[in-house]
Amino acid sequence: MSPNLYPSQELYPLPEEEPKQGTELERESKVETEAGQEADLKRKAEQPATHETDYGRATAPVPVLHTSEPQQLGDVKTQELMQIETILSEHIDTLYQSLPEAQRPLFKEKGEEAAQKIDSILRGAKIKARQIVSIIISWLSIIPGINKFFIEQQAEIKTNKLLALHDKQRRV
Image 1 (cartoon, rainbow, N blue to C red):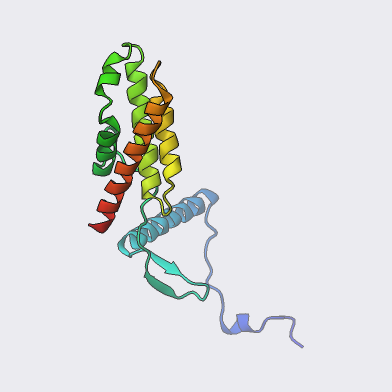
Image 2 (image 1 turned 180 degrees about the vertical axis):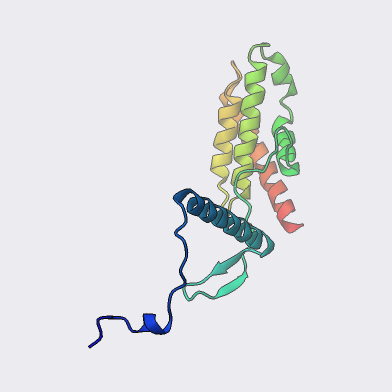
């Protein structure tokens, strides 16, 4: 019986190297991992996004879906949002002029928020007109001394116009 337990070492001797110092080894492994990560990122950027199934096979590219929030860059507004704001501001100019100077910026800001909420509702799969009416009523309620029946009437009219605009855009 041979004292060597692994006879394959005799057939395939390992090359003799000097052991590397810890810092050199760390530097080389760090460089290798960084280069590998950069190559992976480049490969992923060049390939279209795919969806992998449980079986590991790639299927068709995954389309980018739009979120329910409007995509805005700073003060840039989408065309739909501008149309919503136009509908909301119809027949409100005299009420806006009657507001005190201190309340005008608040009314305008709340109107823009209402338009964004309505836009997100209209982009959704299921549109609830009652939500749109309640958003408009809460926005118009900021105006002091206004008749609540007038507010409800204006909210209904504006909701009908917004729904008609939405139907028109879907058909195009």
